[in-house]
View 1 (spheres, rainbow, N blue to C red):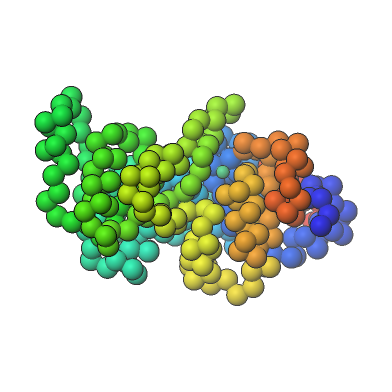
View 2 (view 1 turned 90 degrees about the horizontal axis):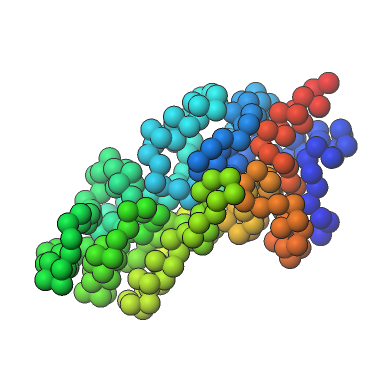
Length: 305
Ligand SMILES: [Mg+2]
């Protein structure tokens, strides 16, 4: 396998062939289109240029703690035109899709953000959640852990307000009901919060739940193969090779895209450097790389000359 090539270092003819090699772009959001906190210059123009060149573009994120309206506001801010809510996929949406198919009508316990819970509400998924603001004592903890109704699933995702009592209640639900499924969004171990600020992800909190319940989780965020299958249905993908996956991480994006049979492109605008990419095992490296999504604007200009 040859090392990844920078899309602007391809010859003009190769740039043309590259653009002609895909119809559908699936792009990660944080680290590619914007940062969790902060912006990446000229990405909106690149989205518009890809669309003007006849490409379909869809967005996927492991971040459900931004509301639908929050996503739309971000796309408006960067000037990306005609992005619809259905063009954006993130874990709570795939969780809703999964629940409707596999657990129809069942009540669930949510260890997810308020924004994610709002999406459950919008889709008429009955859920229990626990936000305890008062000081806890052993006695009040016992009260909070009482199970009034069993649930069909515990839902786990990034939840910045996560507390001990919520974890303890989730464990109780799983211990009390053998049919209660543990369903998780992303499995990210690092959360790139802002430029030069990477913090621990929520993966170890999920490990805590798994350890006390001996239960495995069903993942529905990147890089889960179940998500790859859902893409096939949602975006009516007929030929995986005509799809390119763009991301800023190797495991959640490049490896995931490759496992789906897509072409892969790593952008260096997120948490990885060119050295990180080249130091990875060859099979973990992308087909292509770029400094930023904005490089597509330059490439499309080059081939139109
Ligand atoms: Mg990312």
